[in-house]
Image (tube, rainbow over all chains, first blue to last red; front, side):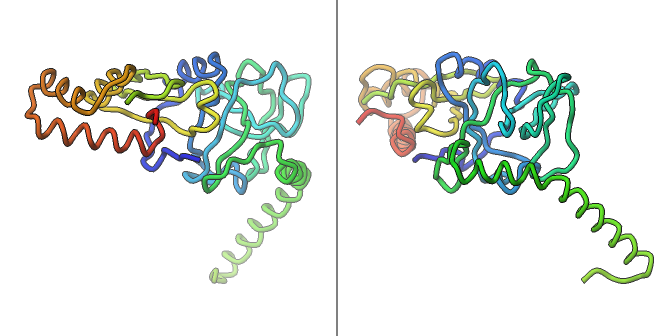
Length: 163
Length: 88
């Protein structure tokens, strides 16, 4: 399977949007190298490639949409809940969810990702299980994160150096 | 030789980008950027063309010597072949 991103071109996603729409209109998929760590451990910064497709008319829980925030930035996060005021989204490596994301903000949805040259569909049972567990364990990660920060503060106060 | 079907060439700012569409996008992941002469060669390859004709066209359009044109065409074709953009 070819991977043509040996050298990465940084193009503003905003400018790529018309191209993205054209590719979708032609029944295609759009590939982008993932940047950022919010979707770790599933999507690795600068290594894995996200395969995006035209979003369906309604997203389901555990889908991973590419959406545009009100400030104009583009984010690829997971749907962890659906409410009347919109989707609840959160990165797999994050603990604080984002509420009220409208469907009109969704630009594309992750269909698969390419890791080490292998295409892995999001429908893969192993990754489906991962999505369910990762979402279910989010509150615990939040508590663990708070505990870690508290411990760090206590250590700092007592002058204990981190090893 | 000829380039494969299933690619779109579009300009974003000053960058020429080639992206796969349709079925091609399921096997070709990523996008390709081309410089000015790359775009020229890419467009010529929409029809059946040989390296000689490509080099000749480069010479007359960009006023470069034949040796440079041959080298550039060979390099372009090698990269395009490697990326699976050309029909066998």
